[in-house]
Length: 142
Length: 142
Length: 111
Length: 111
Ligand SMILES: Nc1ncnc2c1ncn2[C@@H]1O[C@H](COP(=O)(O)OP(=O)(O)O)[C@@H](O)[C@H]1O
Ligand SMILES: Nc1ncnc2c1ncn2[C@@H]1O[C@H](COP(=O)(O)OP(=O)(O)O)[C@@H](O)[C@H]1O
Image (cartoon, rainbow over all chains, first blue to last red; front, side, top):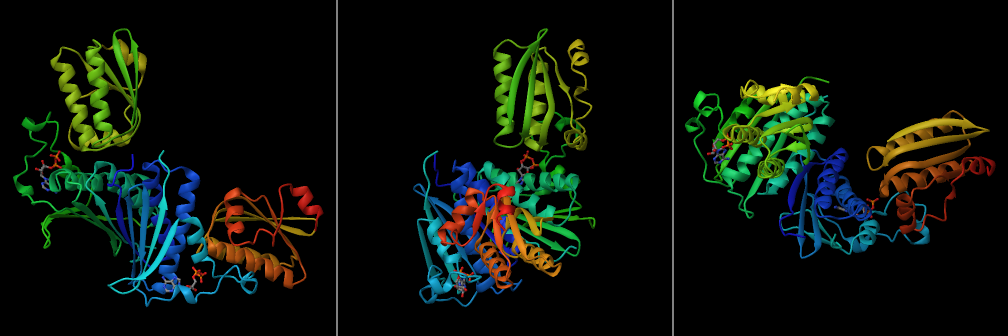
């Protein structure tokens, strides 16, 4: 069922509108893999957060900078990499949005969503510069 | 209306099923650009032919070889580049499908479709090897 | 693509729905026609009313179907040709090869 | 995202439809709320029944709206919370911040 052949790479300009483009390919691919709708929605949300951060914080909406999305399936696990061309950051230094002081903050919830919606989330500095977030989720056999 | 910022790059494995992936992103992008449905369908068909040739003739359905699709808008003209990792070919040497002898042939109509559906179709050898087809179409302002 | 087969007065009607495109729809069309022929069909009416997209492989398959059915002494005709599919057949000058109807009764009576 | 405003017994009901996501839906929500407040609204009921997706920016905007309305001495409540949106509010422990109804009459009576 989960062949290793479902993969794509998508590079988009740093515009929020392009997040829907990623969503449309992602959804189509997950559907072809037999991933059910609720699960597709959770993966969609996590990837939206990663791409939004890449566009906003990583590339600072610079239209000449790209966001690179890689999708693959490795032995029943969906692996999505989102890379930007920004300056990088330290995920440890980010305030905990569940802290009482942050509760009514207008932002700062993206990393938490990614971590709760996926099985594994790793931030790394990419050799080519910029941040790469790797999102992993085991998918149930259809 | 036609900002220069609508662009994407998509790389897919050499499988016919992935042609629909390209279609889904392409359609979404053309819709965002205000291109009407009939015109979207014609561009979709031309790109399908280009990707099908890249998968079939260029990459010979080798799953390790990729098809690369680049989409951009340059001054009111949609420019789509489809590149494969194949051995290349000579488009001049291809039989004319409108020739009486070819009329009932089961294949050989793809290049003709691309040329009739788009304003301009150019085949070139890519510096990295393989064939690159460039498809151009002026789009009417919405 | 989805294919539904019906039979009427010695004609097999194949209703196609969706995309007749490379690797998927074209293969399904070939299989459906092969199956019909193996079941003894001679005359085939392809209802293309619900077809949304036909690429060059789909066109090739329509032509192959036409040739196969004709070579076996049968007839292949088309019922309901969406304008997008007509455009595609027009470009490769195949529109004149196929006999096209937009009324099923008339199509059936013509065989 | 689409926003439709209605008024009932001194409460402004904003019906949201579609995606409250970064750069588009979140901006529209902010604009609709600002407009309502400028028109003199104090109490706002957000009908989220037709909302399909809320990302962290959408959640942030819901929180900002809540803070703004509350700081002005008004109340912000939610009508119809799709389970997907509830899940998202749950994750960041915001579900308890908002008063949620699934009956419009009851929601209106509660202000
Ligand atoms: N790709 C990135 N590049 C640089 N900084 C980032 C990136 N992703 C996240 N950050 C930093 O981490 C912080 C927290 O991110 P997040 O939890 O998604 O919340 P928000 O985007 O709402 O601020 C951001 O404010 C930003 O400073
Ligand atoms: N990307 C490509 N790489 C190698 N050969 C190609 C490529 N595209 C087309 N060709 C050659 O050109 C011929 C005609 O292509 P086309 O008109 O699309 O018809 P068909 O694909 O049905 O044969 C093909 O049969 C093939 O030999």
